[in-house]
Amino acid sequence: MSTTTAAPLKVGRTVAPVLGAVSFCHLLNDMMQSLLPAVYPILKGGFNLNFGEIGLLTLIYQITASLLQPMIGLYTDKKPQPYSLPVGMGFTLTGLVVLALAPSYLMLLAGAAMLGVGSSIFHPESSRIARLASGGQHGLAQSVFQVGGNFGQSLGPLLAAFFILPHGRASLAWFAFVALAAMGILSMLGHWYQANGHARPQVRKAGAQTGLSAGQTKAAMAVLVLLMFSKFFYLSSITSYYIFYLMQRFGLSAQAAQVDLFIFLAASAAGVFIGGPVGDRVGRKAVIWGSILGVLPFTLVLPYVGLDATIVLSVAIGLVLSSAFSAIVVYAQELTPGRVGAVSGLFFGLAFGMGGIGAAVLGELADWTSIQFVYRVCAFLPMIGLAAAFLPSRAQITGKIG
Image (cartoon, rainbow, N blue to C red):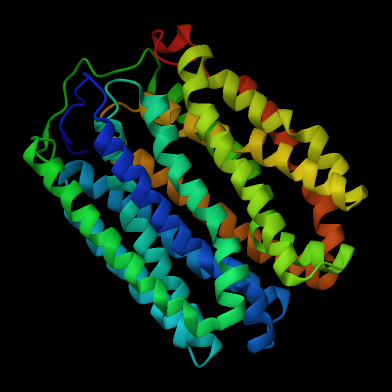
């Protein structure tokens, strides 16, 4: 194993302009990424797709990102690449243009893969910049960074409803100009990253250790992966199929269903923002436990209520369930000091990978049964949150996390 990692994190004042800029770029990145599931109704009709083919489209996109992100994060821990961020955004730009003009399902898959590559490059290094700019408030910084992404995701359905649906799939190409603007901001962030001396690898200090053995650390990471499975399998049922669920069960139009998906995603963004600072104060283990297991009553009720109650419950689910992600990422970073990029890449990659596999599996299940049955089955996934009981306590990790 290499003995070099990225430069140690400097604890000082929070660099708010940098944190704000990287969060804004996360908003733009995830807004563009979210356009893919947001235009599924257009693609389903235009290419005569079934739910299984829609699930495969999501799988290709998210597996591309999930496989590459940990490898990119591990590489940049050893050899930081401050100017890789605009390159990643260039892949996203290309993917959007391909999706806008694709003549076949195969080209749609290629466009989805390009989006995945762009996301895989963006997340590890941008997450590292957020941590470096945190001033030691790692949970807050991760939340500010992540809320940009979640709010960007929530904009996708609105853009689909009021811009892409009226103007057609080709209007996706206009978002290439948004990607160009993001590339400019990311180039400036790369300059800050390099100019402040953060982009130089150093020998990892021997004191950068936790109070856990290697076996205990691996077991804790395995629990976190299991919790990620629960969280993102359930979320994939919403992000990929909630529009179709609302249209089929309640007879909503595609535009109205897109607005309701926005409401869910906006609640998720609020949950992400809340989770990080709360984790800084009361301990990340408590946030993880309460977020995943605490959403269970809402998911169990959702498949059996009317439209108004469904929307209210979706807000509660988004708010509670999403509060865990910032806590999970920072918890994992502090379990493995000096490997910020690798850990960020791993968990952002898992988020994409679990979501992609979930979309593919649930799409096939929906074809065999129904969308309503999918939601009845997924309602039990938050029970996996009981596994949080096996995470190390604050005292076991030398008072760093709880």
